[in-house]
Image 1 (tube, rainbow, N blue to C red):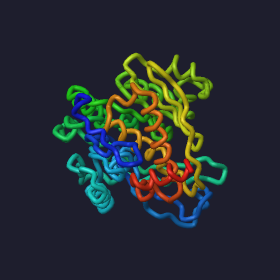
Image 2 (cartoon, rainbow, N blue to C red):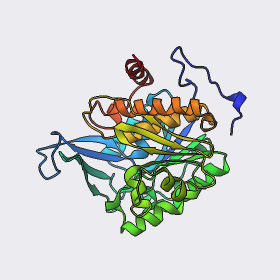
Image 3 (cartoon, rainbow, N blue to C red):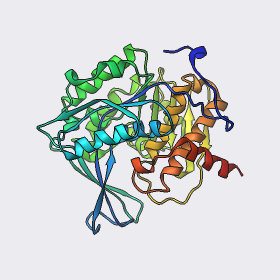
Image 4 (cartoon, one colour):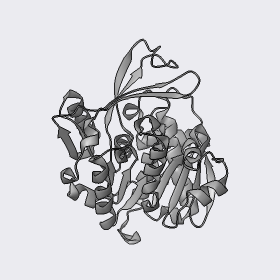
Length: 343
C-alpha cells in the first residue's frame, strides 16, 4: 500500500476531493436492466421497457471513472450483442475492461426492474445460468487485480459456482497485494436459494472486509429483524475488529458512519428525484474515489465527513436522471450541487 507521502492530495479551489486517484478494481456482475418507460408502475403494468446497462459492481466502476478516478472491472458477460455492448460501455467510460471475459455458451444476464408507486422496487431476473455466474478462477486477470489500491465487490457473485470460487480467489489476490477490501452486500433475495442461504453467504466473508457499505434494510435482514436505526445494533452485530469503516446508507436522509475511533451522521443533499436506480452505487463510487486518493481518510473525522458529503451528493445527482450508468455524475456536477446546497 502506498504511504501517505506518495499520495497526491492536491485539490482544486473547491477544496475536496483530491483529483489524483489510485486504481479501484470492481468485481462481479454486469448485466442489462430493462426499466419501464413509465414511472411508478409494476412490471406487469409497464407498457414497454428500455434497456440500460447495470450491475452494481460495474456501476461503481463507471461512477469512479466518471468522477475522474481510475477504475477497472473484472467479470464475465455473454459472447452476444449485449455482452459486447456492455464491454464497450465500460471502455467508453474510461474503465479498464481487460478483466472482462466472454462466454460463448451462456447469455448476458437480464433483469427487469421497476420502482412501483408504493415505493417498493420489483425485480425479475433471467440467469439460468447467465455468463456472470460462470467466471472461473483460471479466467481471472491477476495483473489487474493485484494492482488494485481498493478491491470492491458485492454478494451476488457468491451465490453460485464457479463464480463463488473465482470471487474468493480474487479477494485473496487483492488482499495479498495490499489492497483495501470494500464490500457492498447489495442484497437481492430472489437470486438466493433461501433467506438463510443469503444470510450465511453474505456473512461468510464479512470479517475480511476493510470497508463495508450497508443499507437499513440489509441491517434488519442480517441481524434477524433488529432495529436498523440503533447504533448499538450496528456496532454489536456488524462491526468487526478488522473493519476500518462501516457506512449505513439512509437514502435521501444521508448516511451514518462508524470507525474504531468515532461515529456520526452526514445529512443527504436535497434534490427532486426522478429515478433512484443506481443511487447507492453512485454513493459507493463517490466514497471509493475519495478513499483511493487518501487511503487514511477514515482516520480523520473531518475529512471523512467531507468525503461522505461528496458521496451523498453523487447519489443525489444520480436520482435526478433516469437509469444508472447514464445518470452517474461527473466531479464537476457533484461539486456544483454541493456549491448550490451550501448557498
